Structure formats: structure tokens, C-alpha cells
Length: 451
Image 1 (cartoon, rainbow, N blue to C red):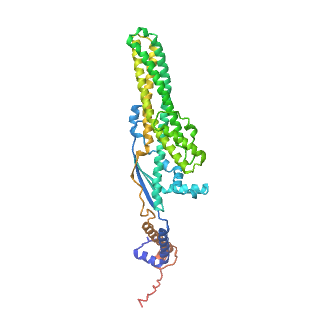
Image 2 (spheres, one colour):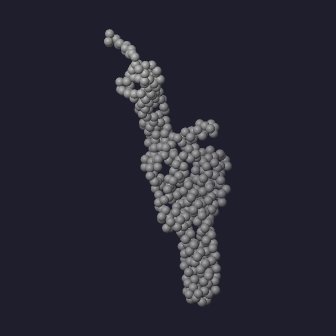
Image 3 (cartoon, helix red, strand yellow):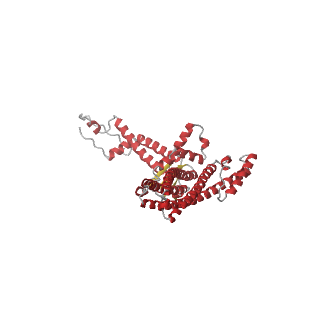
């Protein structure tokens, strides 16, 4: 059997014979793609790029050497996609975009959440920057959604860091209190033992015991003041988190101990005024709302004043403790010279070292907490979301061009299949495939030009 030869002339002849099979599929595909390109809803995209700045405070849970080696490894973007695509974030976005009315039932809610998730695109460009994009048929909605998503991510990430820092401060404060109790106990035992040898000390060293007693009294007074400050801050923090439009629980505010801090008297007057108005009117009454806003404002001012006073008193107490420790050390050295009370001095030294180390860690944790409260400032928007003016998709030229290519391909395929399935004989080569002798040729029909 001879190998079949297929020339350009034969290919064109096939297309002429099967022009219907070629033209109809091509026209259908091209028409459908063209219509679809213009019927598909146009989508606009808005994007924003945010830069993350690393904190300069070392992790208080680690030793200094380990913290230095891991300083740059704390990746604030390690859970970037988990936060952006999380269900709470999507639901908050739905509320902010005013789509809550569409959520008629759980099925519709899940469908809407799934659709919005598909409209979000994220791109982490480097270890300290990321991009959020949002597609929507309304340009203004796309811009607003991107801005809201970036704010939700920053807020969520800041809350996570704040909870971690708050836990660190609480943890080290608790440990410091425990060590302080053991330290003061060992110190008291040591001082009692040393007093038994007071007559053996020089006259000028005897006055150290009086100083130690005075320091103890002052430390106790300051510690009581610090406890009052902490109690007041807890009450003020709970009151400041009261939701708008709801009544503030004044029971706890009235229990705040009288503190010598700025705005304390103004707060008491504002609380009294708000209490009187709340008994006469509802929370929606303008005067009640104004009084409530005044209370919330003064709560913030008093809280800030207490925090500043807390830091000052803490430093004052630690300064007194240092003076007391120095006095005890002087007395201890005199006793050490005589090789007395070695075990007590060893315990005292151990607890003193642990106590001082824990104070350093607490200061680091408090510094991290202070930075965390302004953690949102660590995120810098270097490319704000812009209002898109041209649609990002669909690409009409690409769709129409692709449709034309697909249509031509299917047209040629349909023409070829029609030719292969046709069993009629037109040329000698159609007979040769059967390997039979040719006994005659039929003349080709003459065209009108040959007549």
C-alpha cells in the first residue's frame, strides 16, 4: 500500500468541499466567545501594600543571648493568610460593607463568605511586606474592601501581640511577687540573725539596722500604693470597654480608692453626674450620652495618670530596695568577715539574684507591652488602595482572540472528520488504497469556463 500524500491543494480542496462543516462550528464558537466577552460582569481590582517594621525590644521570655540570635526571626507575617482568609475577618468585612442584610439563612451566609474569599487575593512580596487585592464589580467597593481588610489584619495581629505581651507582664509580675515574698523572708531571717551580733559591730554600723527598718516601712507603704493603683487600673479598664449605648457599671467606679492623681476629682464628679442622669433618662438621651462620653474620656485620662504614677512609684520602691539591700550587704559583710550565718547568707544571695533578674525581665515585658499598645504604628501603608478606573477582568481581547483560535481549530477538525467519514471516491488515489486494478477513469465534470 502506498503512503498517502497530503498537499496544500488537497487541504484547500477539502475545506472547499466541507466549507459548511468548517464555517458553522467556527462561527458558533467565535460568536459565543464574543458575546460572552461582553456579557461577563466586569471586575475592578484595588490593592494596597503594607510594610511591617520589627520591634526593637527583645523577647522577655528568652535569655539575652538567645533573644539576640532570634531577634530577626519573629515573623509578624507568618500567619498572614490565616488571618485575612479567616471566617471572623470575612464576617467583619461583610458587616463593614453593609452586606449583613443578605444573610437570610446559614446557607446563603456560607455562599457569600465563599464568594468574598474568592474575591480576595494576597501576595507576600518579601519577609516584611505584603499586598492585599480585592475584586468587585463596583470600583468604590473594591477600594473600600481592601482598606477594611488591611485594617482588620493590623487590628487582629496587634490584638494577638497585645495578649501575648499582657500574659508576659502578668506572668513575670506573679513570679516577681513570689520571689519577693521568699526574698523578704530570707532577708528577715538574715537580719534577725545578724542583730544577734549587733554588739560586736562598730557603732557606725549599728545605725544600719535603723535604716533597714525605715526602708522596710517605706517599701510597704509604696507597695500598698502600687496595689491600689493596680486595682484602680483594673476597674478603669473594665469600665472603658463597656459597649457604646450601654450603661456603665458605676458600682466598681465608686469603689476606686482615693488616689492622688490628676483628673481624679473630675472623674468622681462626672461619674456622679452620669449616675443622676441615668436614673432619670435612658442611655439614648443626649444629656446622658454627653455625660457618658465625659466619663469615658476622664477614665482614659485617669488611667494614663495612674500608669505614669505607677512607673514612678515602682522606680521609687526599687530604689529603696536597693538602699535596703546595700545596708543589709554592709551588715552581712561584717558578719561574713567573722564566718557567721553562712547558710543564711547563701540563701539570701540566691533569692536576691533571682529577684533582681526577675525585675529586669518584668521591665522588658512591660516595655514590650507598651510598644504593643501602639503596635498598629508598626505597619506602614506604602501603597494605599486607589479607586480603580479600568476593569481588571475579563480581558475581552484575549477571550475573543481565544475564541477565534478555538473556532478555527474546531472548524478544521470538523471538516477533517467529515472528509474521513465520507466513503465516496473522487480521485484515483481513493481507489489505490484498496490495491485493486483500475480499468477505467470517469471524466471530471466540466466547469462552465471550459465550455
